[in-house]
Image (cartoon, rainbow, N blue to C red):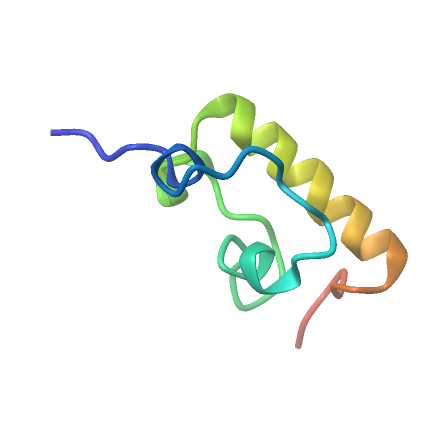
Length: 67
């Protein structure tokens, strides 16, 4: 039995870069983006997630590196 994509399961249409609490769920303790295998997110949603995380980093909402 395979797990369903987090975003499809919770009916999330748009991954917003301003929703940092949601984005932090997909980052490891060093603030790196987790792989699709770890998060069970579809490939399309993973690309949108990566773009949202990168935008949030650029805007200063998320750190590039955590210590």
